[in-house]
Image (cartoon, rainbow, N blue to C red; front, top):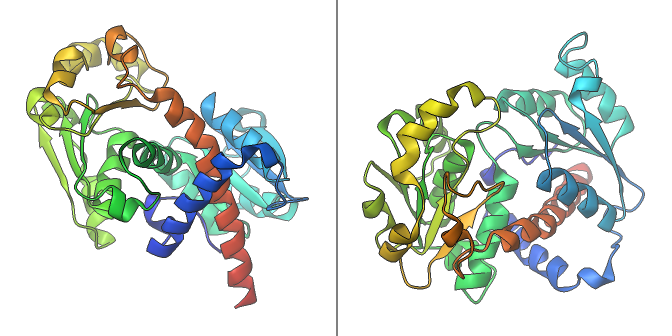
Length: 318
């Protein structure tokens, strides 16, 4: 059974096809719904609150001809009076696929282990692969004439600011290794990238094309992309004041953008908090492409689901 839990769960040819198809879906959206998943039922299991993830997946599943079923984890027996394994096996009897937004990455790994249907990672505390694919699609649209991330992103410098131990920082480290990007991370020493992502790259034979620094201007120098995320993710609210104090020097402002390339992109997976991780002036600048990123979640996720189903059929046939 094929799942999409990490950015490298597709091979190179499959990734190229996913990016090409996402662009086709975007160009031909008026022709929806397609027949790619006609008659299927896909579950959306959420352990965390969501806006963009829920809406983009629910709309995308409908546009592929399938029926989305949103499942609020707090209203189920899962994890309390029923094991993840049993939940996965039962849902596999009802559904054609399962999209999960969870806390620990081990949750989706456990679902994948016991599911006989595809499982897609919509976000964990470790990785956010759907967001990264959509962000790479956005960079290709804005900076490159083409859809191939292996050729189009090679050598591009991305600077990530703030909590460089978060899931988005991890995912950019992995994207850098996959696509040959030069990833620079700037943040407080106590939020340096974890050994977990280093170990993951080594286990998967991926070169680590990333650099950590405490100097935000060093990271921003000559960057093609400036990226940041919220300083306080869900589950870390009790650390709010401590995080605000330590990350204040890594706020993305006009001075940071001035160090990057003149045509640099400013990216943020949202929700953005003006005055915290980024200034309103940067958000209002022509460098900001946040809405393009959000839109591309829809097209990229449709392509991922289509590919997962297609690969599942190939696996069955073989």
